[in-house]
Length: 342
Image (cartoon, rainbow, N blue to C red; front, side):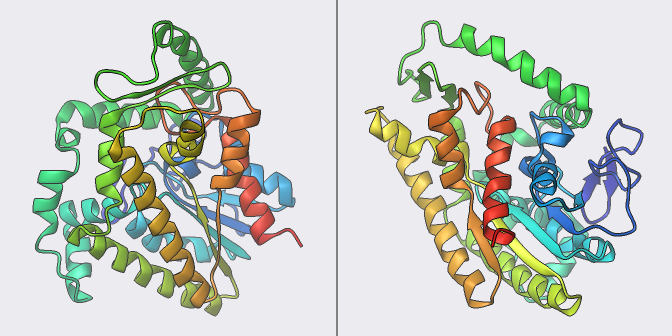
């Protein structure tokens, strides 16, 4: 990874499949028709580059695309990349918004980056409580040196086309080992799905983490929410000024995608699961209303991903929230039908 004063980091351009800007593209074109902004879901973890949703959308629309997605990015990185996106003279900028952690990512970047601290203060945001929030509520283990190295290694490894392929095939056999003695609910409240078409584990610790990340009643998440809406408003103005259509694709969490399936099959779910799904629903609904009021098109990919859940075997790895190719195709299909299909 290469340090960036505002983004935090970009990929090393020497990695296979990474362009000289540090993003997952074959090259940097003078112009494109679609620019994709987003995090690891837009980058395309667990799939080769050609199967990430921006590239699948390019094939559906027969349009060129440039992918700015990198794992760990959030609202502030999307805002900062607007200038780079506009320079490519696209007709569309599509933001893949993953609300399960994008608000927390705003808090995290402000907390650790002085440039964004100054930016926030200059805009009148009260950021005094963000540091304490992160230390007490957002995965304190993530600050350990070991986890940072592992995370960066994973990101670099998956930037290779062959790396994503190996990731796919290495996770398939693991699932069969994990589920031999699986039950619907473990002693630690992990949700274990041991059915032929869907074999996966949703960790209780992950559920609790996502529940905190999406809790709009928390003053820090509420602040990040306000910042995100302000970013949307500015993105709308800047895009319109350059004759660009700015759109938002809501990418659902795996926890949310499985919710109705699990309820319908009488799984014993912890209360935190219900709370997290409700938090995510409220965020999507409220932001959708805001976007509609300022004439930004948006779409929730959840229905398309859920449909894949019932029709395609194992669209997610055994213990990871990033889908395989079919899940990515659901993201692309939702964007295509909402923003391009007439």
